[in-house]
Image (cartoon, rainbow, N blue to C red; front, side, top):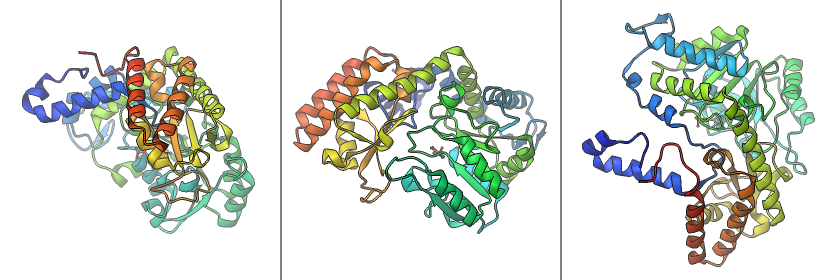
Length: 422
Ligand SMILES: *Cc1c(COP(=O)(O)O)cnc(C)c1O
């Protein structure tokens, strides 16, 4: 049963209530390993489901365009203060609707159409919004993409420096969406300083690890930090832009009125709760456990002959090239989903296949760590993955459903926030 319960929804709209209940059950029964996903706490669910959704509040605390902000102002100010204190930054804007609009606001603050930006290429692990030609970031600006080395799977700073010197970008993005290794913020900062570019660290995936001390912080190196709030940070879907005092005004103006109208106050409140939770000692344990689990899983997968991009992981994420297993990423991801193991097909660096039918899969440990799984269960998870792929290659659907049952049995011992067994 969904927690908080949905009796009013069930009465008003039973069809939709039924779908939400089924989704809660699905999230409970599956090993959720999409590395950008998590389970928020029931407290976060309550805040995001509150009457704050009723209120319009264009502007910022103390400078709003509508009346009735007596309580919204302190809510947003509290959220901003919590972000500043958790990450140790001068300035935080908590209004971006999600990670992509947050990055778009950064472009609006620093670039004119046609200006050059340097980011990790999408095919190498960067995000769409770091200059992909199909994104507005690549269509309205002049994107230059850096790679990872073919032999190491890691960023080659000689290449980044060469590109920066040759192309003179106004903005350099570091961070991405399929990077299994620690981001070297000081190395990026040195290059950005040399060419006079604004360095933006997009920490969407790793914000929770940074808050919990399980990944180095970009603070002091990056001029601007963007992040989603719903990945390892374990808050509601949303985003923040953090910066030094120098860039605060330009970024605030870019978010509102540059790009957005009224902030989503119910989301802001959910972010406040998540930031409060992330400041507790238990969250440090969580962040370190996420990494310990990913390391243990990477070791177990390697032992079973899986080919991990860069040879392993430093963070929450694992990228696997399945070529050695004789199956492309998409059929593997679909079979694993039928086996109760939810992850996504993904391109690997230098992928010879097409993006919608690539060679790899991407997975991570943030959500299963929230459920309470530890290193102890990771060899079993690796075994299930291996057995599922073997079964998929033999079209053995019975074996795949048997694994789904075993996954469900294991997870019945690990409570899920947002769900209670009926
Ligand atoms: C997830 C992600 C985003 C975008 O977030 P959305 O909320 O999906 O728009 C931006 N940058 C990186 C690196 C991400 O991983």
